[in-house]
Structures are given as C-alpha cells and as structure tokens.
Amino acid sequence: MRLFFALWPDSDTRARLAEAAAWSGRGARLVPRENYHLTLAFVGEVAESRLPLLQQIGGEQRAGACTIKIDAYDYWPEPRVLVAIAREMPAALVELSARLHERLALENLRAAQAAAFRAHVTLARKVAQAPVLKAMSPFHWSARSFTLVRSDTSGARSVYTVVGTWSLLDETAKS
Image (cartoon, rainbow, N blue to C red; front, top):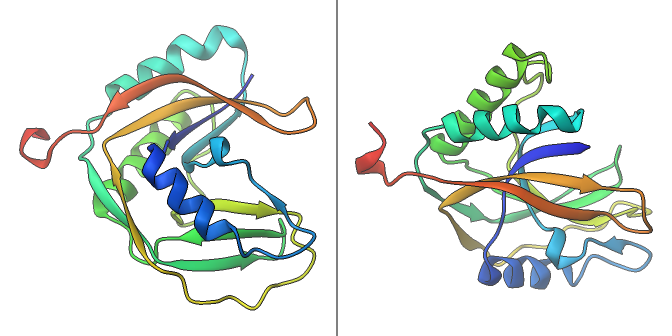
C-alpha cells in the first residue's frame, strides 16, 4: 500500500482550493477536489502489516493546531504541476512534518527529510507549459487535525482513502 501523512481540508477549504484551481489553463489535468491535501510526510509503498505502526506513529504526535495562509500560485516544471502555496508556514506545521520524517526514518520507513518542507496543495497536473502566474486571493485554512492516507494509483485516477486521523492540539494544551 502507498501511504502519506497529510492535512486533509474541510469542505470550505476544499471549495476555496477548487476556486483557485479553476484558472489553471487548457490541457492541464485538474486534481479532483476530493483529492486535495497538504502532504506532511510521504511514506511510499509499505506492506499492509506496517499499517498499525504507521497509525501508532500518527497517534504519538503532539502538535499544535494552526492556521495556514494559502496566498500564492507556483509552477513546478519537473513534475509539471500547478500548486497553491503558503509563502509563510506556521512553526507548528514545520515541526510536525519534521517529527514525522524523523520518526519514519527511525523505523526505516523513509529517509529523513532531504529538502526543505514546502506547504503546498497540488491543483493541476500535466501542465504542458509554465503558466503566467496571477495573483491569488489569499485564504486561510484552519488545520485542526492530520491524517494518514492510502493512495491507490492503479485506476484512471488516484483514489485517496483516509486510514487514520489525529487531532492537533490547542496551543494551551500542547505542553
């Protein structure tokens, strides 16, 4: 099974992301709105027998809830994707991603995070050429939980299934 830890948007945030994706251009394959997510740590292919360990890792995390300001578009030429990004990331989000990567590395499930964490949501794939990026109407995403998600890419389009969800803590309850 192919797994990753992510923030899973609520319906209002999902609608705002869909609005943001609407202008992505001809030829691009829009990501279905039910697949929007913000990856915290990609696990990759693991045996189903490792799922309980991954759920345990998720449950061990103590991270604060946060608000993410999605405020710009970016185009990444290597994977040919259009993404919505947060130019400034909440410290709690960066810390959660780092702790997940460290814990996965301890279990030999994934190497420690190699590149700097970039909070983003993929809006469109197979973008043939770099679009002229327009200004985005910023919006806020109130992250109150994170998830472990299974990705099935065997069909015509990816299907994501949440297999675990954990609450993020109010700042006063974090310690």
